[in-house]
Image (tube, rainbow, N blue to C red):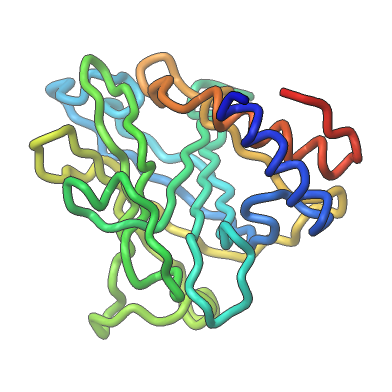
Length: 231
């Protein structure tokens, strides 16, 4: 039995049991703006990162296992950058609660509060000619303290610095993310993010574990429709 087949089956059964996606079943949608700093020297080696610009975003916060609050959970921060690759061509970046160290940035971390630490892509992205992990770091407010997500959304924008680092490199900031308003969840269900389908030529996730992820997501969709065919 292949690992991908097992992931498909497990995800399908979990989705059928909860009548929602197997992972990240419920979330909060926010709208905002992502501003890319840019580098005149072309230091990133990826045109989207090297070129300054501002883009509207749709962000979804979610709890990976759907555990009730205040229990800690793996927290997801899914960012859709509209028109990053031109009109009608978005960029999807998926971040998971993690640590920021060389090992911790590759491992999910259960956390009770969405703003108490960084989020990482866990797996590397190909940015130009190098592989780099991307991360989102919450920016403290004027009181140098991070409030809860709901407190911050109620009194002003939630801000992040987006950073990237290759193995052995320190983190370098490439963009600022500002979330300004909560959006209603579509009546048809959750917004689907896909970092492989919505990538850019010079900035895309590496292929590691892609087959496993695709199988799990296919199983989740099948479980919700009652069609749990093998991957």
